[in-house]
Image (cartoon, rainbow, N blue to C red; front, side, top):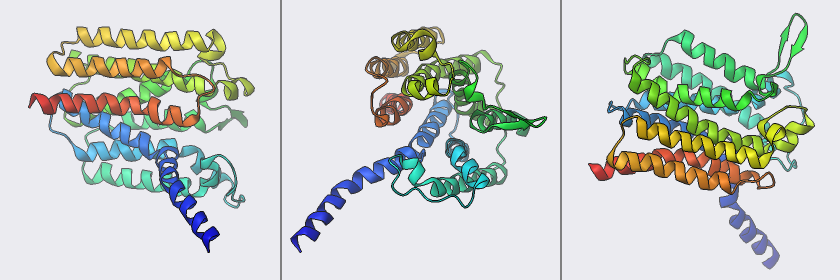
Amino acid sequence: MSANRDIGIREAERHPYRLLEGLLYSSVFIAFCGFALTVETYLLAELPVSWAMAVFVFLATLFTYNMSSVQSILRRPNQPEKRYDPIWSQRHKKELAVLGLLSIAVAVGVYFWFNLRINLWFVLHLAVISVGYTVPVLYKRRRVRPLRSVPLLKVFLIAYVWAVVTALFPLLDAGLEVWQPEALWLFLRRFLFILALALLFDIRDYAYDRDMNTLTFPGWIGVRNTKRLSLGLLLLYMLVVLASGESGLILGALLASAVGAAIIVWRSAENRPRVYFAILADGAMLLHAGLVLLAMAVAG
């Protein structure tokens, strides 16, 4: 009886960690980061927040980051379950595939139901990039490797897609021209910030990419210089923020978010546990949005 109780206590103690694993490795957490950055864009542009757009970004991000599970299950629907695999996403591949398919279905519904004002062809080119990032395609009977395998390309693709979705989508939905200087400044700031963080995932995946013969920045210039490059991008981001006309508490929040991201970059290493990158590197985006929201709340 006592042994059963001890097992129950240990299981209860592990329950919060299992919940954290679920939020992180199902990509719910990073999808919420996209949601928060989208809301931040509306506030920075002094526009009414479109919650439908923020939810659309959340769902589209959730689908994109679970694309590999969707692809795997669709290609091999009868593959055996790996309930004892040490990798969480492998143990829950079918659930992630279902989550991904539900996310894209609801995202399409939100897009049409709320009549989001984003050109469908503009969305399509991002979808091609997002799908092609992880899914290999056949061209003239030859297997073309996914975009993430193209040397040095993946960090730029990540930064571009994130900057367009979280910075330009809200402006387009509000009926603004994205070629206006204010929109371009916002896009550039978001691109630089995300690019600096994306380099951390090159560091995380350094051993895997090396084994797969994929050239990334750590494999080209080394881990230490990749961190320096990331810090340099954050410095450039801060200079762009200073040049883009922000002031007061908002300026302080944007600069503070870069300092917080720089600390995360400085402490990153190839042998850091994956949870470090999942919580802190992704969480830097949430810090970015949170500090801006806090600054606006204080400013009234």
